[in-house]
Amino acid sequence: MPKRPLALQLDEVVQAMLVSLQPRPEKAPDRQLASLVRVARELRDLPREEFRATLKSDLQRRASMSESTAAAAKTGTGEAQARAVHYMRPGLKSITPYIIVRGAAQFIDFLKTSFEATERIRVPAPDGSIMHAEVAIGNGAIEVSDGSDSSVCG
Amino acid sequence: MATRRPVRKGSRPKSGPPQKAGPTRQDAEGVLVEAAQSDPEKFDALYELHFERVYAFAAGRVRDRATAEDVTSEVFHKALANLPSYEWRGVPFAAWLLRIAANAIVDYAKRAAREFPASDDPQEPPNDPVVQASEVRAIEHRAQLFRLVKQLPAIQKQVVLERFVEQRSIKEIARRLGKTEGAVKQLQLRAVQNLREQMEGSHA
Image: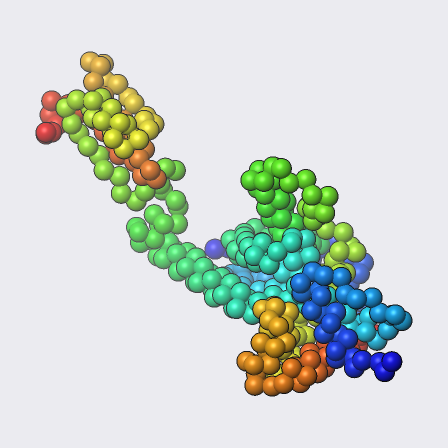
């Protein structure tokens, strides 16, 4: 039987490799084919060019962000310094509403019932009212207080 | 930000190239590391130098392309973030990256074990945080092959990418390139032969 061209033999092995099948065993394992198959096997792990390029541009963006933050922090602008020193407590976002309301305890109960809020901090005042409390809702939080006589509240 | 000059002391890797008078590869790399430490925008050069190596390592240890990409991405982001704290001390930059990669893969394996606790497949990929010398040789070999693909003639490179990365059939590639299936198989053969010859040349 005439020997099949090498291009066909290689492709048969590659095809089997790509669909995870065992290639048909050659009657007389060809050294030339075997060395090509070794290369082909490694090529299965070749990275996507698009991934290489996307990751590179992500890193460039990140690098230029960190560079501009560091440079701005050196100049002493308040905003840049705030970004550079991670001033926020975990669990808080950039803006956290502070609600001063008579009946803060009931308000917290309402938040728990209606918004599945979780109470994180409660600091009572000597008279039993709430001097300060913090409740988490989703990935944000609200701060709550009964306020004092001098506070203007609804 | 204060720059830290890498401390070049300690033993060099045994498998490294013979040391000659004049600048070595590690000295050149030290310059790139210092440049990136003082200006993160120069991290590009280190990325170009090590991408194939890190990807080859990740792809060798994990099963699927998506995880290999996630690990590679994590390694370079962590490396960029922690670059100011990197000091040479006899540990080449590549080894530092591979250590980050090995740890990232261990974390992935732990997460996967938590998400799929029933999986007790004996074929689990190795998630040893230690990278053995034999594995480093295999990584270097594979990374070199990946780099050589970029230097193939354009049409051969396209066939390799479509066949092995996109996993398209010969028929589909033939249609996309406007060629016969026989011609695509010949191009595939020539590309693989080219790569084999260059790999043999590079290891001669």
